[in-house]
Image 1 (spheres, rainbow, N blue to C red):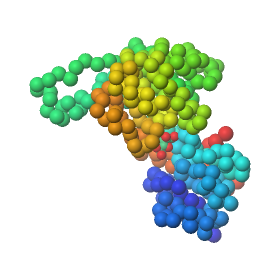
Image 2 (image 1 turned 120 degrees about the horizontal axis):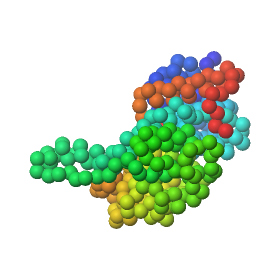
Image 3 (image 1 turned 135 degrees about the horizontal axis):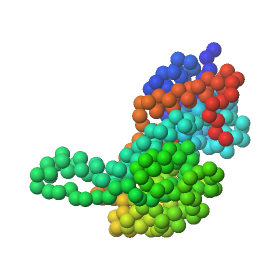
Image 4 (image 1 turned 30 degrees about the vertical axis):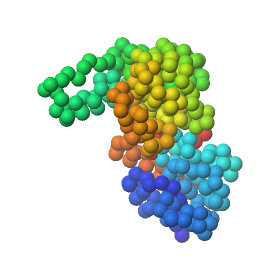
Length: 309
Ligand code: 8YV
């Protein structure tokens, strides 16, 4: 008898294929009546693959042993509910750090130099009659990184390659880190040209980039969010981007994805992206392989590769 697992969302195709070859996979998101399906079949499920796992779903799976999440962030998994039942949780750290860091620098340059706008300018045939203008560059600027974790460090070293000065804020000063530490986010925003957000989502960081922090970053300051939309007071950010209180923003994440505040669509001091940080074939293959390997190890009684602490 094969092990039965539940997929909560569509996954990267090669990952899905690897799971289907090894397990009996049930796709909850394809069930018309999810509650009825869970009531009838929930007891056979031993693992979840995917993201978006609520306490309510966990409660309907009495024999659940492990949740293997596709992604490094696990703010959409009820970790407390899993812990209460000794259900193991894994994520996909490290393998996506380079792709996310690379995209961060790409979006920063895209905003500083208005690359998407330049593309539109040429496509719309404006070049023969108009000049696009002069913009800013990263060279010599200070970037304040919120969250100097694994991805934050990759961003920091790439920012240094762009000849930027790196400072950071997090809950603690880190030993053996060559960057100036700020224990106050608002103070760091005030002293930075760029504020880069790469801290985890969830209740602990909700709204941490408040109106005050955005105002401290100021009319010449640029915000880059590649973490979670929930970190930012989004209405305040939209207002300040529109009235010149904030210089610009490059945003890969939003509070209510895939819905983006429409007021942003008319602003040319923003660059918008549909949560693409880890979206390369290379990285998604590695994330899928890690998810599958964690499940494999769990069912073989081997140590997990990347368990959520
Ligand atoms: C998503 C991410 O997981 O890893 C994360 O936390 O935000 C992304 O890599 C990815 O978009 C798959 O849903």
